[in-house]
Length: 488
Image (tube, rainbow, N blue to C red; front, side, top):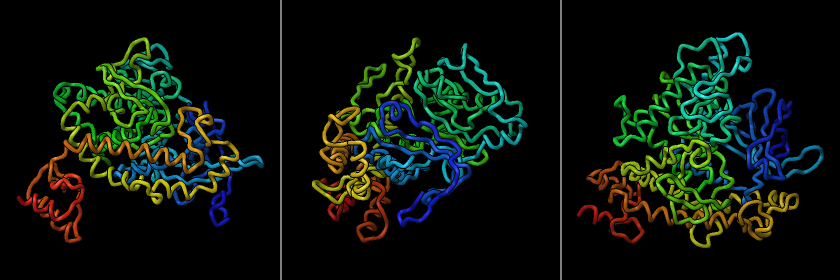
């Protein structure tokens, strides 16, 4: 691996090279790969790890949907966001195109930095954890999707603390049997793979299954409390969940809460004892790059091609209408979004953490210096070479899915930018009425603290967490006129 100065970034043995992805592998001529190095390496300043991914972005003619969405999650304060760099790949003496070298989602000091329960379990057992027998309870076979079931490895010894860390991932019902080595299915039908520890013991799988089930019971109750008297917020970092939801909603990701959706729980001794959501992952079919209609059992419908509708809020649990035993039909997000307090919190976090980034991302009308266009310019020469190799733009006839291809590379990026602009306009109009007017510090109240914050900000010191709530004069500008209205 060479760096931009022509020096050697890495030279060493690649222990394993495997296929990456599902649709991104099956439908791509330009294949994506998982890479496992023989030893940990800090590639391009992204932190030490053995495991990396080379994304081909063949289904995304802008090649920026993953990059911009992950950067959006970072700007919005998601605790972990995967770093990546664009590279030109050569193999077997031939040029293979523009690839995105990206960190793999896993537990580690430079990745999802939570307690490594897998490492601790290895220390407690003599044999390789993968050598122990896999077992399933609540289903007739390991590859079966069955509500209430869980699968694990018959590992004899557990560490004293099995409260974390767990890295979990939603799986579609029809992939769960193959993709999840360890995992469980909730009573409502949500299939969850235990990504780490990859080889979970019975006690570990049962612990996290019961924890998530108690959380789910609280979510679907009328009061928000389960039979144990605990509220869903006792199990979930709510701001983290809403941030993860907004990433999916803004991008109109066709997988949304169905696949490639991660959440985690740290050890109670190290963390706060709650589920946190992220990192954001897999957005090559987002921003109107794949046409689909989704509907849940309440009859709520979202369409991926129309920027002026909710989408992720209406997702069903993935087994709904697809398996022989239909799942509940409304995802955790959809169920929570029915609650006024969640809608108001979503509006606050959107305006506070997302809208400023989206404005920078797409810039003003006809602005050729927007963030996304600058990202495109950085890789333009590489993208031109990539097109000579793979012919990824020039019209919709070159698309595998949809019609999201421009006449040239920048044109393909502008299609994404224009869709994001429409999305931002719709969501801003939808959620602005839910803001507490005048609540510029974002604490849910309008009082003298907001007046003080506004005065400081106008005098060029201090900050406003939610500028949109401060436009009381309603002229789309925050200035002294808004302060006068606030004081009145």
